[in-house]
Image 1 (spheres, rainbow over the protein chains, first blue to last red):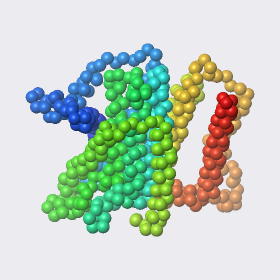
Image 2 (image 1 turned 30 degrees about the vertical axis):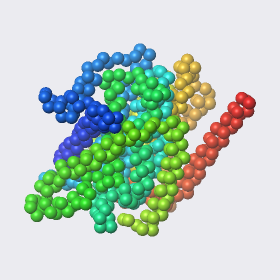
Image 3 (image 1 turned 60 degrees about the horizontal axis):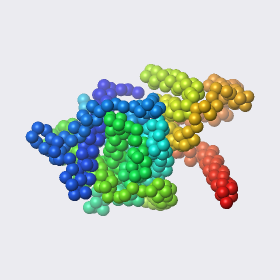
Image 4 (image 1 turned 180 degrees about the vertical axis):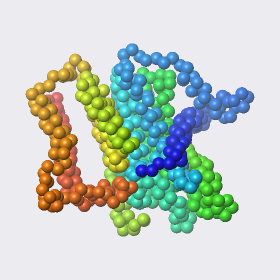
Length: 368
Length: 184
């Protein structure tokens, strides 16, 4: 295989950009979460910390929090299994940031006569790598629970692993119809086929083709990222703080960094599969490039559209993440038997029927 | 060159880590090392261009089956002094012997069918190895093979798995019935 320096450099830069976005989303989301919680509970929330005399809605609060957490004492309880206790918080962060390389930030650029794909890693098997790596992040929670050597933590870890395995099945099955409809695993191709217009007035989004898949996928990503209606692993009503009981300081917040970056990546994947990714709803990037090409050259036009694509993708993802926050403070936590019942007795059969129906429809209609 | 080097490094690491895994005392440590070995194997598949196999290796083995392994190990949580460590029974020596035999068979030319089809006449009748038309259509290649050449094997394996599921349900039910009878 031939590699050019432009390709290697662009891949590295795109990976770094993805990791940077994934890591920066966490502090911002913690602020959004606290503010939204406060508004739902008719409070003001953190609105004081700012830069010098400017209080920008308390947006500097995450910086203050991060400094506080970094300077806390790094205490390891004497009774824990040390190696795994230290290793456990790193795994979710590693996996959560590693999978950001799959997100396509735009179609492609032309640099020095070479086409540069704006997806850092485009494997033959497409976005499946995201599922593979996100399924590994559960080891962080499980190991944290086991190595803490404490019954509440252990129960939290066991709950997390059972929950992940149960919901991963429905999650995988809910994505298959989308793959059947677009006929590919490649996120770039999926997004490109969503840029047209359906029936003259709707954007050609996956959510209009596979609404059932979208609902199941949304529910399962709540479970996969351990968000509130499904956060049985740390349910503070029953298990002091679950797997987090023995953790403090920066190690404790690393779990949150991992959780938020995983939440971001899952929202970005949902946007790519069901809401047209980096494409604007009614105007496709292809049309914009044709229109801009009359003014400037195509190379410059593609460079101009790069920030637009990134902003569109981020705005769509953040709206979805705001929905996550909204659900967190609206819906009460499930009981554990209800959680298992929902996963195995409702979501899995619905996903299977949905898959069978979609397969039949695709066989007769042929979208591609 | 880069491919060979990364394949060599991954292979060496996976063999070394497998040996380390076998000699661990704590079951959780061994399970974690097994996950790392599986990721190394996935890396080898990826280097060979079989991205779909690599991803399904991580997704199925490291991400799903090993989670259940770790779950059971943690649920039982046997204290270390009750673990049988370092003693190998006669039956296990036999298993080790067969394992080495299989490794030799697969790792040398014997297992690759070179000795079986020595004569050119037999070689002419032998089935040609499958080479995909394009390496860029991983999922398509795998699925087209599964639904044409290997359909019977695929369906039989699925039947085997179904039998295993039914068996485990039967065992679980039996234990429950016995438990109820004893308590009443």
